[in-house]
Length: 185
Image (tube, rainbow, N blue to C red; front, side, top):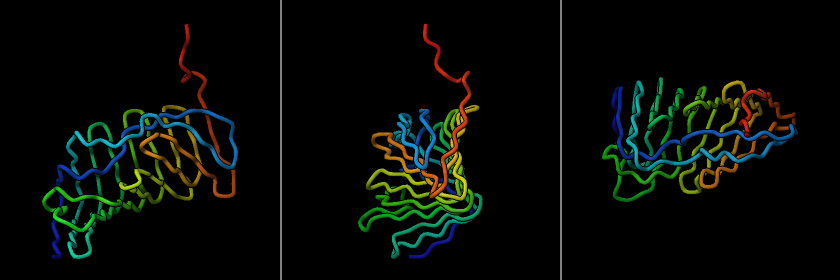
């Protein structure tokens, strides 16, 4: 089956996105590891997907959203130029809203926002089987308020929240706002 649908497109049970980013500070170096405790997958909230075009290729087990892709689930938003959803062979399909998703690739200026946290990169991969996320680019930027983390590759284990920011041969840059620290009494 090959189908082309024009925007906006909605899917209600397509497990897609991550919730929030919670940044922990540490010394800068070629690689930065921290806990991103707000990173999680949500199965209980509907997902709205909008794009200029959707092509479903059931024989290839993939769906490709192109042009101004926007995915919203709860307080989390992802935007990109293109998103390809790969799903397992079997009964489900993206068109029916019950596909068993293996992997999602996003391209062309990826933007993630959840509550007060934001992340940007050139490309991203969400591996739903391993529950990992990878965001890559010349400049991957994570921010929460005035706190900014810059590298070229972010890897997140969505089950545990453990995250690694790599500088790909350079150095990770971190800018912290002292006013963002939790006040203790």
